Image (cartoon, rainbow, N blue to C red):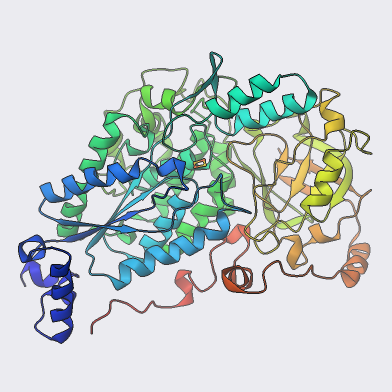
Length: 576
Ligand code: FES
């Protein structure tokens, strides 16, 4: 069989019938010549650029670099715009739309004459979203990370995305900085294209894409505006065409071991808590239903945090420093003993061959196992009667005194009532209390808004308090920090025990023992359950209604139930 007959796009373009007449005719309408496509892999470049997405501003130019690489390798590149999700601008949560973008990517690939895809993403949820869709499509795919923005700067001080916004907001509330300083933070904290440059969800997820083998070696660490980012984009274009000839598809790369590599790398990076939800969703799409919370907790106990990047550690280092220190291949080289080195990657080489020559150029930024920032991994999964299906905390970015803590619950059913307490200078709360926010989970939020890093109440901020125990079924930004228990499952909105907590109850967490306990007896909990009523839905129509009806819980990755591999076969490729 000739290569031309094996290309998926030829079903649209090569046969002699009325349908293909139309397809060829419409290609010609766009000025394409037969020589552009005949016998050539058609590469869709899925570009999540928009004028509402500062993290992807450079994609408008970068897509031309990808095209250059595709043409060099004998492919035919065509840009395909897709939904652009900017985490900072979308209310209430970009997670609400992760699955919408995933569906769009899957369906746009499925319905077009496409042999391979380059995914241009990076801002938080765009990375998992695009990978989810590509996994379900299962055509050769390379993920092209947007790259982090440059370090923030104001008045000679380095600023980190998110982390410094939270920090300076507390100082402003405490009255310790001037309006001019605050304005300097606003204008200086994000000053170039690219994704948040702390170890937030964006940096975590693009590193995970690379560790999974879905991005070129080193691609995720290159700053968005570095010329190396352009060259990497050209290489991605060249490589995707080769992958078509090799028929190298995501499901051949995404083994259980590849996901274990991703989890180990996430832990060593001091990852965002959001990584748990996204990795589980990706694994389930790839048919790896055996990847779950237990893998995270086991690896978190084994893998040390090596990346000394804010908000972890005590340094001021950011992703730009990480790149200069050698980037992800250098970190993975130091992590080799925890990795499965034979796994395939989009480079055509194995994980081991990709990282064997990588060197660390700054031992303080990328630590060794012996000098780790944090001896254990960055996340801990807690279980107990308050979270029978698990919840998550980030010990590497919280005050150690809350690792074992008992306190009195102060409970809020929604964010507005919580906010009223937070802003009340006379609020009835102490630093030993436990703030509980509920109805902010996958269905209750909906979309688990990043409300989990509940600000310390104004009254306590003025007393100098900067951390306290907070519990919710929400998420928090990867750039956040503090003693915040997140992702409580099952969530309150569907009647999880979180819905039954009352102000005055005692809650105990023991992070070393991985436990969380509500000190209320089973009989009393049953009595409260009988009185409990589900809150009204926040969406009664449209995508929000569909989302609430089909979203899975946090411990299952928050995918739609009808999108998981187990939901059944897709429609397949059109053949008419
Ligand atoms: Fe885009 Fe942070 S807002 S990565």
